[in-house]
Image 1 (cartoon, helix red, strand yellow):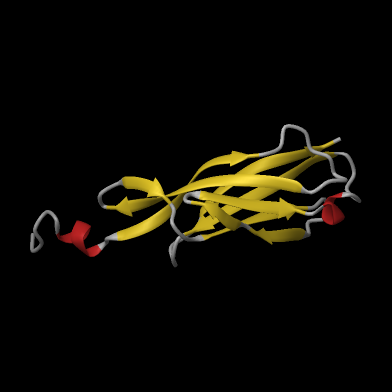
Image 2: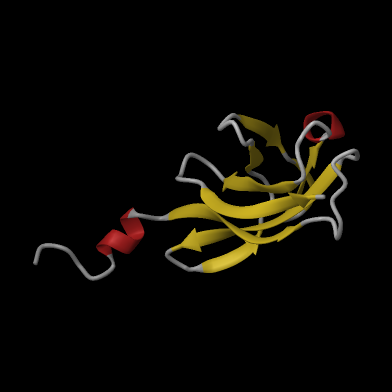
Amino acid sequence: YPYDPYYWKKLLVGKRMRINKITLPQTLDKNKDTVVTINVSVLDYPKDVAVDADKGTVKATLVLPDGKEKVYTATMTGKGVFTVTIPAADTKALAAGSYVLVIEAVYGNEAPAVETTFLIFF
């Protein structure tokens, strides 16, 4: 075999995001802004060590019943913490029910980390 055992680990060094936690308000009122907090970390490959993200891009996509989507960009509010606000102007006309919220986090140009959650409006 022409390569030493660590050849590929040295060659494929990289960083990628991981979504650790998505925090939603206890109760959702479609007539008020919905603030979602996303905790993310950066995984360093091949070390497999995670640290709170010091940069990156996080966005949230609200999937509407007609198949359309509303995309919101989160702002970094602390190391490893991003906050996205879904304005009441976008939710007040929604019917009561469950809506899918897709969270994407990316550190550089790698494939994004993706998690889904639900917003339930009454």
